[in-house]
Length: 194
Image 1: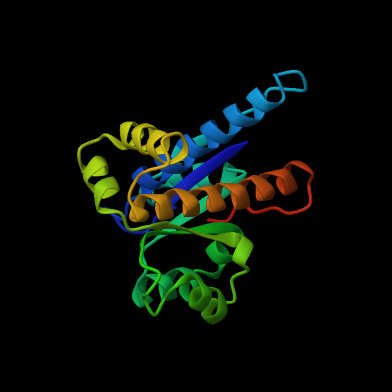
Image 2: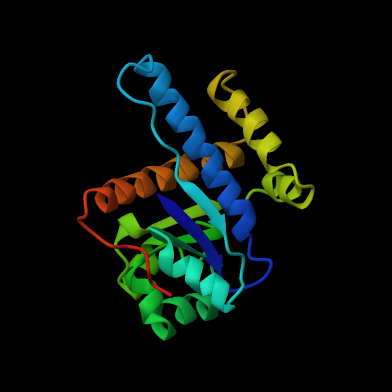
């Protein structure tokens, strides 16, 4: 399985969001393998492709060939209108990831789903987290995820903001895993959209 991450805007966090999603994918796969004692099968990790915000022919080819395209967007009316209204080919076959998400914004997940008629299983969020933002700016996303995951799930501590980040990332990864199962079973074609 190939998952391509693409964002229309440079600096919208596409790479950082891809790293977070891939870390949680790996962590959940490791948990399942541990619970099953590796007796059933080792889950194959999808290949994650970072397309950034490029629009050249090579990038378009990668996006066409991907099994799933995750469109990274900001939580702004202009950006959302562009994705959902001006680029209908993108919206029909993609999973949408809203980065630096604020639940209290007028364009929260529920309103985005309602306004743009996006099924809830096709949209995920990465809540804004100042510590995560700093880790991204320092190139330490993986270290942040490892340390904070340990704090939350083993030591039962960690900030409310970070617990919310992990909750939403796990929810998003769960939705992506369901889509990947549908793709494997040939039920839906979410890729080949740009």
